[in-house]
Amino acid sequence: MGEKTEFRVGDRAPNNGHYMEFGESLDTPIVDPKHVTLRKGDRFPNTSNQNRKWKKVNKGKSHNHYDK
Image (cartoon, rainbow, N blue to C red; front, side):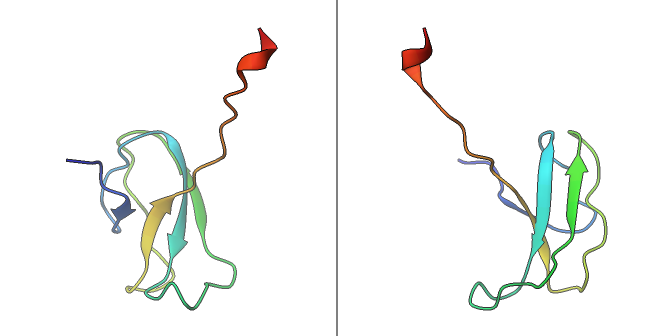
């Protein structure tokens, strides 16, 4: 079973990271979404409206093995 990827207001952050609110429809992007940086165990704050949730922002990782 995988880790949860969507979080509601009041849920606890599973990991340190940067999270962004997203809307009820993937077809309609949110203009100026809220962003928060949380530490593991912090609670998610309120979103702009009750239909939104939080999702972790994944920053690209480079796995360049040629730097050795």
